[in-house]
Image (cartoon, rainbow, N blue to C red; front, side, top):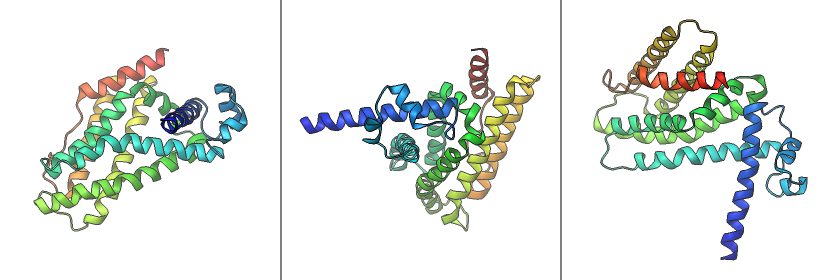
Length: 238
């Protein structure tokens, strides 16, 4: 029992450090964040910090691992569900990622303001690399099932997962920059229509890469885009 309590306490304290680091990355960027910032925020000693992390890069690695765990946990049941077709699993994969973002939409918007700044270039690169490393094998399992079912027909099954993730990253960057530009955008409806059109274009590209039927993947609705527009507006007014 004592060991379980100690492990729980260790994880709790470690997560407090990661939470503080995440707040600073959101507000000032990874490059400008210092270990001293974390110490002052949590009112802990350097010795207490180094008990959990030996450097600032180690904190970043810890954050990335935590993100990977949080994402993988809801994805695995979809992947291993024997009753779902490959197309249902792929759509479930995309829906799960969307739902995770929606559940934290306020934080996602706050992060968006600093994510593409030079001060977060290292974080951005590390996260994108970690995302590829984690999710490509998961997607490949779905793709192999789809090929066996005859719903996907690409001659490059081992490369499709990576190609899809590059497309998703490109779409995500474009969507984020459009949404964050709403403060300067005079025509809100035009911005919403562009996001819907871009999403449809990327989904079309993914279907073509897979050799899947046209319109077999979900296209984002105006209602969903308006959810994000509201969060952006609320954030701007605060």
